[in-house]
Image (cartoon, rainbow, N blue to C red; front, side, top):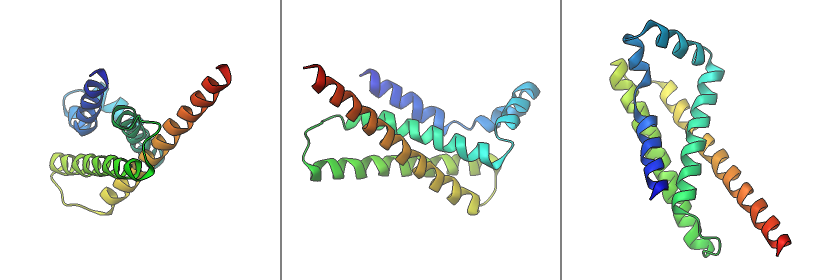
Length: 139
């Protein structure tokens, strides 16, 4: 249950248009613009956010270690579908907030989000393997 709550909070935070808050506070606007000033920091933040989303998704819904490979693949594809939906929804919310039409920037952000999700998946699976190996050695 705790993981479901964490997942809901993470998705809500991802979808919230934090850029909108820059209208209300100059101090917040300065900090926000500092963090997202360069394209590199923008890409890194997108990747980090969606790596975390995928990690929470995997830890919540794909924890079976001995699942058949076909079942694991289907579950993995469903998790990527959730990530793609959240990434697309995030870009849509940002477009509504900015009141403009879609451009290539949104597609780059979605590609970055999916790449970040892949990194999150690899990290979670790698840590899981290390823990499993060390647990086997201890027994």
